[in-house]
Length: 334
Image 1 (cartoon, rainbow, N blue to C red):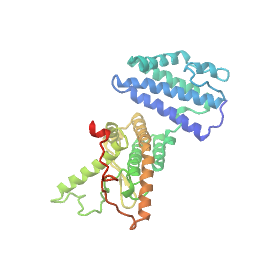
Image 2: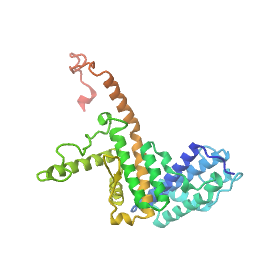
Image 3: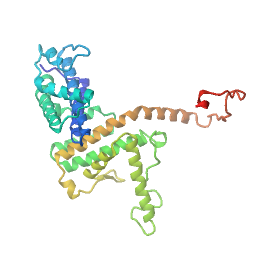
Image 4: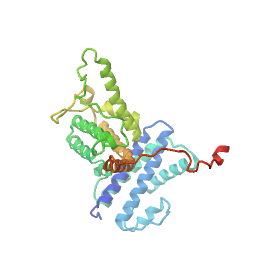
């Protein structure tokens, strides 16, 4: 039954997996914020069924009710768990239309239903496990994607310490991507000042006598730049703080080597912590991608002005186009 998967199908499956992971993260929040998980689980299933129908050559009616999908696809494949999905749909309708918050039990029941559904159906329709679909395909930042893939190779062999270092580098690359783009930071729409360099004078890395104040200011500047960058890109700050607790700070040296200290907490990092940290980088990359058009627009304007450097005209502001026209506008009487 499984057909070869094209890149668009893989990307859409990655999106389904992302929606499901979003639901899992939301389910861990305090009440009533965790209620949003019901909607994410429902969206994940609905997107999955739409993709499955297309993959199987089944045409679904526009604006069809959620549970009608089971009957529409039944001639080709009998989807399981219709009764359980009805409970999920009822919980979503109660939340969306009646403002009735689901209980913790309902949310956990919905999560178990959805994961069982994906585990059963995905291999039979698409010939793969949903967990093997890498959500990294959704990202637009090329260096971040490669570092995430490199980190996963270490996680696959159980080396979560090295994998976490890779995630740390991936997040650094994400921020750098929007600070500098593909070249000078002068054109970036997210330019919060030039980064400090180890070669800037006076050099304070050693914390020499009389330079402690300057060293503290330098540290504050680095933290502030990264925080402003993250918040401007829509990245969740508390999650970023947790990410930095879990992952090591990787330093890049002049010869290109990258080294980090393996602390006691890092030695005990778990696969669940790695999964959370990887999802954080993925989510951050997706949130940041909304700035891609802004970056492209800023770069285009900067390059146009650079090519005309030295010949750009100047004008002075002189007030209204017709100095005699001082008529009252609607704004003047408010």
